[in-house]
Length: 123
Image 1 (spheres, one colour):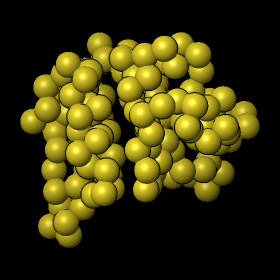
Image 2 (image 1 turned 90 degrees about the vertical axis):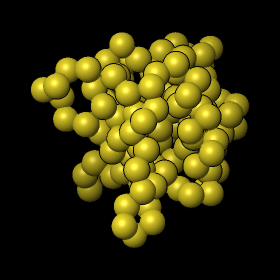
Image 3 (image 1 turned 135 degrees about the vertical axis):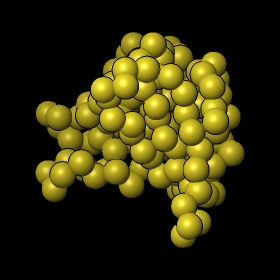
Image 4 (image 1 turned 120 degrees about the vertical axis):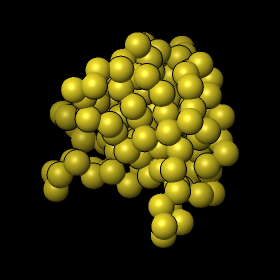
């Protein structure tokens, strides 16, 4: 599992769904294990100065979710009893469900550093 710090290193199918507005403030990206449904490929978490974008390689539905820094209250890092580490994205709007992203252990440090660049609280 790789953590990409240069947008040009991303797979082409992902790069086209990241969009130009993110590339200038690109911090990092990695492939998650989140598969929203059977017709959508695995999501990539793209961290950029304006927030977090979840996208995939689907031709017409490549952008799954775009989360602005203004929407995020904080991040919580947790480790399950099985040893899996994940990030919980906590939203300012309490009506919004928290969003969980499993973090591959081999790139945990890089992901945490990238998230910290957003300037939000990490619990």
